[in-house]
Length: 113
Image (cartoon, helix red, strand yellow):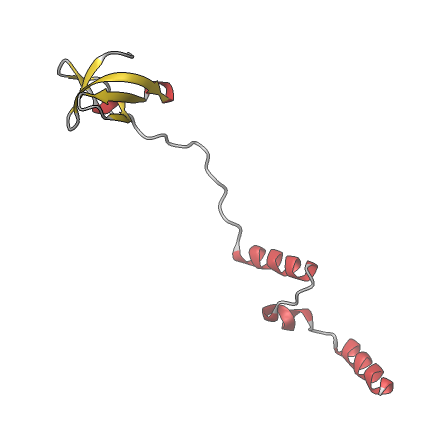
């Protein structure tokens, strides 16, 4: 491979100087003195294409679907409470049936003044 004469449709004839990515890309020095690293399927040798264009890699890993919205909101609520932040959108949910506690706090504040 290295040292072979090849031809590129736009850049013209050149010589393979190095091979990269397990032979997928070639570094070619062209007759005008420029060197380019190009995919090997772009080159022609003796009128024949050297390789077919390769198909793109298709990953086999499929990520899990995103969690449901209510589960995400629940996690956000727990994390915000853990950080000491009271999220405004959940205040009514967190204060339902706390009438006795509220009255106790108000009574304690009134006695303190």
